[in-house]
Length: 383
Image (spheres, rainbow, N blue to C red):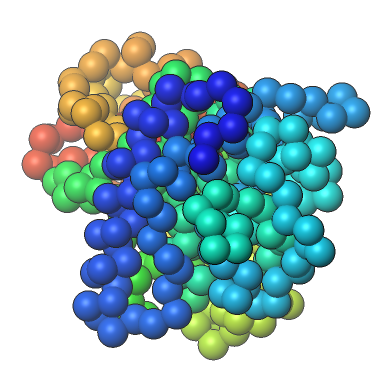
């Protein structure tokens, strides 16, 4: 089934991915869920990853391929755009096809050809069933294994990230870490039931993705509504304070339960999220309250008068094999990370989201269990 040189990381992760999807799909079926995607076997996982990896290293007309491969038969696509002749699952074929399918939401369909076991590309689709094995080529040598979750076809949860010879498998037990913020739990994608976070509108998740995507780095502080205590930890008045608080995200979120399937509402939410996330690129931090109302941006964080300086934090990453560690704040990153950790230490009921220019993303929250700031590294979940 493999074409060309083998990519060692593909074989390394194949059985883990197979077990993950088998477990997820079996659990969904036990809950009475229907219209689920087929579970991929290890050989198929290895073949898809192998072909995509070598395709990612090619260039077509000066561009690196950015593609998404979905493992499903044409009859599970709604509707399928099928080729008159299937294409081989090979790097050269994928790279040549990439310019036509690089826009978000378009997947190349991969399935077994005819009555044989050889995999082929049968066409494209914009709709895939729940728990469908998807492999996304993000950039040369960087691949993400994910699956569709929830009612929204644009919502995915990551299973593993492959970068060159490095493999990071998302730890499904990551949400069981004491004091794990709801943002991290939602990013992990637990549950497939109608009432789970997979189907809810989590603005913080979308803001985190957008903050990372703009590539300039940024910080977002989430503070309690109805309280101004947080102002003691910033220079106030801020140069870009917003009065009254800008309510667009709050109003869109409130409408989400009734209008989640409305394309106009989805587009309005996307634009609003990108607008707020864009403000985090301004020097300083943007601030929203827990109702997603924008309060200010370009805010300078200062240590609360009389408060101790933050020196160490608990650092975790929801990746299999990654152990929690207490580290010096200097190990976290630059000024944004240090000031965000200080803000959360001074304001225990707040969150701080920090994006680095190199793609790292950290969520800072106060941990009553550890009695210290907890830094959650979550860029593996945002790709």
